[in-house]
Length: 276
Image 1 (cartoon, helix red, strand yellow):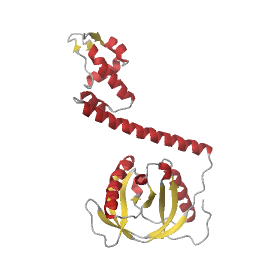
Image 2 (tube, one colour):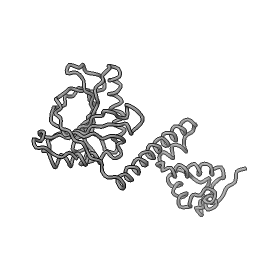
Image 3 (cartoon, one colour):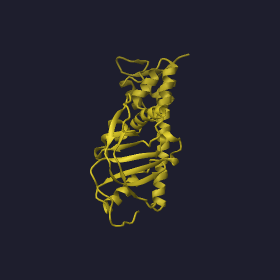
């Protein structure tokens, strides 16, 4: 049997404050069953308790209100499950990232910084398949999945075994948004391929350090290498390169990742330096 209750009673039934219920009514997320035209008093049906509880749990999971609305309004179970699954997957990724950040912070507080090995190398010019775009820093993970997914599919199809990489413009760091080029080295006479462009990367000298493990503390390797370059080298214009010797596409364990950070320099220092 369905009964109606006041907004105050509905608040006690659902653990949603009256203020929150009024807000949900105003935005059309959870409307009362009836509103008295003279007093404005709201009444809810007991059949709405389950919907309110669902909304409360979704908000506790920090699901944005538009997605909550999509779940509540979903007529079919498939649509609702798909929206919920996507949000839960995103939360699991965020949780894993949070754990990595906590681990990194604990190590910063308790461990001495590891000595950074820096090598100098001249990398000749080469041709590559490329995927380029103006990328927001917050969206770099998703963009890389797209770009390297496309390059990886071509590499698997054509048997290309080269190490992929990417270049990052200065603006990507200074403005949190800039040009990024994901690349896969190919032969000089490589034929064009659909969905990618042929790009020619210039040769040059680089100071190179290897970042091993998850990318959570990638900034520590950048800071150490950049400091070394500032102290011992003359910086050359041009984007920083990253070479993904072992990356996400090579296995599920972030501890196995190996990324070469390549900092452009004008020439190899002639005087000996202490690397660290």
